[in-house]
Image 1 (tube, rainbow, N blue to C red):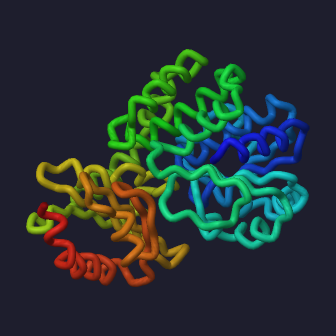
Image 2 (image 1 turned 90 degrees about the vertical axis):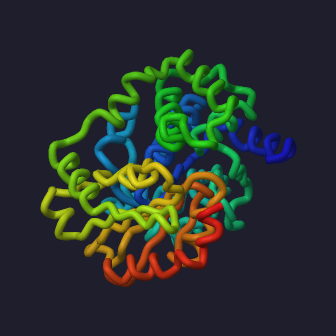
Length: 338
C-alpha cells in the first residue's frame, strides 16, 4: 500500500462511516483476532462497525472481547445482507478471493461499498479498491497492527485491540515458531503486551481448554497416523464415523496435522477429514523448508494458502482421496528428498 493510498484511506476514515468487516469461511484465530482487533479500533474512532462471519467457529475463539457481537451470515442472512448492502466501507480480512466467504460471495461482490483487503495469502484476486497484501507477513493480525501504524495511530491501541491481535499472531505463527515469525513480529508482540495483552491467559484460553472428547479424538487420529518414509511424508485420516464417535465439534481437529510433521525426518504432513454435511474430504497440509504445500494444494486439491501451510478439499471418498494423494507423491519425490 503506497503513501497516496494511505492518504486516501485517512481521508475516508476521517469521518464516521458504516463499516462491515468480514473474515473467511470457517474462521481461525487470525481471522477472528484481526476482524475483532480492527472492529475495536474503528469503533474507538467513531465508526459504526459490524463483523460478519460467513459461519460459526470453534468455542476456543469465543472468549475474545466483544466476540458476542459478531453476526453469522448462515444464521442471520437477511440482517447481514442489509448491513452489507448499506455499508460505505467493507474490510475483507485474512482472505484474498471472494470465493473464500461461501454464500456471502455474491452480495459482497455486488455491494457498492469501497472494499479494502488486508491479507497475507498468495495470489490475491483483484476485487478491492485498496489492497494491503504481503505474503511475507506472519499473520493478518500483524498486518492490522501495521495498518494502524500506517495511520500513525498506534497510541490508540488499547487492551481489547491488543488482546485480539496477540491471539491471532500467536495462532498463525504456531506460538511464534513458524519461519514467518520475524524480529518485527516479536517487536509488535512486545508492544501488544505493553498495551495490555495478557499473553499467558490468551495462551490458556486457546490451547489449554481441551475437552475429554477432543483428547480421545486426538488419540484416534494418532492411531490412524501413517508414514511414507520414501517421501518423508506422514498423513492422518478421520472418517465421519470416527468424528461422530467422539462427539466432534468445530475446531476439535485444529493442530492435529502438526503431529505428523513433528516426526523426525518428516517434512510433509497431511490430514484428511471426512465431512458428510458438505460431501467433501477436508484436507490440511503442512511442510518444513521450501516444499510448497500451497502449490501442491492448488495443483491437486482445489486449495491454497502459504508455502508451509495450506488447505484443500476433495469430492472423492476418503479412501480414494488418500489413494490419489499417495499416487501424486512420486511426482514430488525429488523435491521431498532434497
